Image (cartoon, rainbow over all chains, first blue to last red; front, side):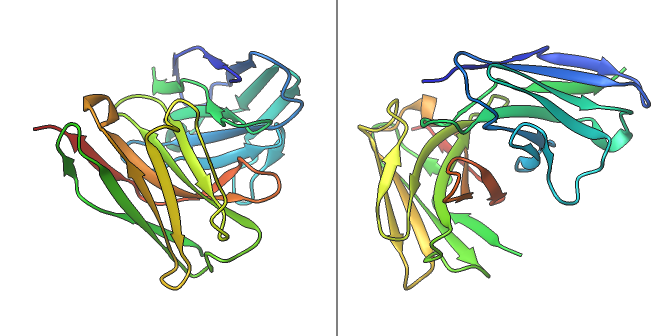
Length: 107
Length: 121
């Protein structure tokens, strides 16, 4: 199985801060990586797919980068609606595996 | 817009079988561009993919659960189902039914609301 490791587990930020979350894969997944946002009591929602492609309707302050084994999700200026938990997931090969999540909290 | 709705018992006894159904609305479960998936999330924890099934009935599962999991499709009702046998407290989770693309596989783009299943006597 491909292991996905996110850091940090928790991140405290103020509105307007630039936020970066890292996701590492245990082996190369090329760019077969998706980022999800999950709010309490809700299902995850796709933000970024293919490592850097913005899902339709997602604000442009979200961006993704990376390939191979190291990836980042960046929020250029975090807004109140962005306080949530973020997951990365590889879709290079099954079993499809997720990172453990990064909770973005209000400082 | 595609809608998925999970249904089934919210409480299952240890050693019994967990059975859930997902009803798909708007889109056809016979779509050749979709795989139908189950993903679970223990309360306060991360996400775990359980398995995927195509409209033809072709399925594949997470090896960690494969010995206990069965999925099926009912195209006449636009539904797919999950059975997980010999459950324990570790199977307590929110279970999501999810649509995934057929190409590439593994990208989960539409999720149900989720159903909490508690394993307890």
